[in-house]
Length: 452
Image 1 (cartoon, rainbow, N blue to C red):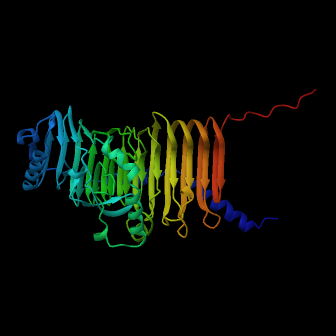
Image 2: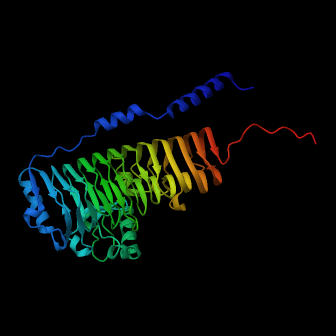
Image 3: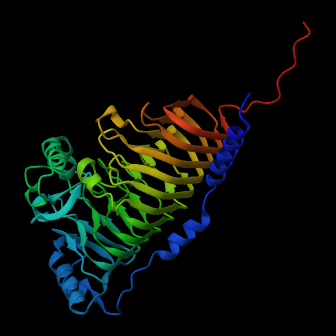
């Protein structure tokens, strides 16, 4: 007979866990209220008046540099890009208190000559800090910065940069070796001959950031990298960027982030939340990625929302709601880490998601690519509610922990996957609570026994 005290404890624990699985709207509201939009001074400068020619041929970089210098002299302002196609043979480097405003019909088209993005700058590549080619738009230690307007930013990533992918192995392996061996940052120099592609837009150690309404096309690598930054609003932007590793938005070691009303169309993850890789990431555990709100977005690309695989400093307090797909995704929601990472993924709440056809609908794995050893991650308190999916060509729900490091406290409430090759694969997980989960055709009342 079950001990009454144990039974009551079990009942209370299960009840508490069920209660905690509810979407915490008040917490979301408090995060959004904490995010500050940039304050931009009244000064304005038009790049065309400084000699920029919107003819798609002439190099407009000198005019853009001059405009940014004038903004700096005036303690900030709005840098206006009027209608036209502006070729830039090199990067835009932000200063504080500036709004780069692309008017309707304006396009910034970056050169694809790698030498134009030297000298190297301090940046990060797949979770490891290093010196490399400058991102095409780069802001370092800036506050109150914005990219707005109805124009297009084109990274010309489909030719020379795309060819870097097959040659990046040497640089990638060296960067990871330097990470694991704690090589001093000053000695991590890449750039020429290492073939590590630059990000399109990177905000690094910045705060009070707005990216609104612009269109991002044809990035060399990750499209929008939010690195060690905070108080960030990304809204109303759209994408058509289908090259290798064209993640849409990568918050990394960043906090207090709002991503809303975005139309994704990417050659990789739509949103990939990261927090450094392996040894270096674990030493930065005071700056996890946290307090990230993703809502009212349209997903299209490889995966919708991803956490990992570089997440060694930890990821917590992620809230995703009211999103849908406008095309095929390989995976809808994907939490991935491996035994090289360490760190944790916890307090993730996802609700009101409509998926069409996917390979896998909801996928949580602590053994990504079967790699690594010695640093298993903690994955806990992950809550899904009101998720619908028309078809999963592989699996509906996958949860993969380790026997000695189980995934804990997963709730699945009101999940309907109309068709799936494999329904559920659940291994090395504890306290997985399912309520109203339907995979395949819903059962009706049992049929009566035949009289014949």
